[in-house]
Amino acid sequence: MQVHECVSFILLKDDQVLLEKRAKDKEYDPSLIAIPGGHMELGETQEQALLRELKEELDIVPTSYVHLCSLYHPTGELQLIHYYVVNSWEGKILSLEADEVTWYFLDSNPLEVEADKVALAEYRRLKNAGVDLG
Picture 1 (cartoon, rainbow, N blue to C red):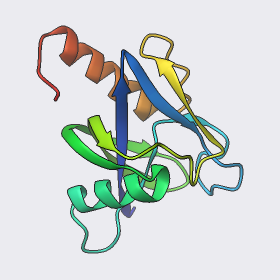
Picture 2 (picture 1 turned 135 degrees about the vertical axis):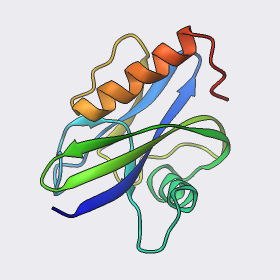
Picture 3 (picture 1 turned 45 degrees about the vertical axis):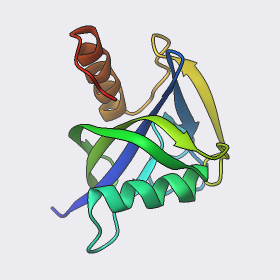
């Protein structure tokens, strides 16, 4: 089975995380609440995909980010999602591809994609252990 690489970005502000309600017309995981992200393009590095997807999805440019983890997500295709924590950015966040984006408290966790739940739990685990994630 072919693996499709993706990047997702955990944007953080004041103990809140930005989550999206995926568009109804998305091929994979339509209408679910998820961590925003997208597919890597052929020949693109993770960092290049991260910068491009943040601009395409939210119209922002990150100024501080760190790789968190990479997880498989079996949906209509097998995805390998590379999660990044983004603590600061330039620009005003706009929802350009999702139905909406909303700030949620880290403890509320309304995520509906299992890999996203694991990634957010890993962020909380590392943060509680005192690991500096930017």
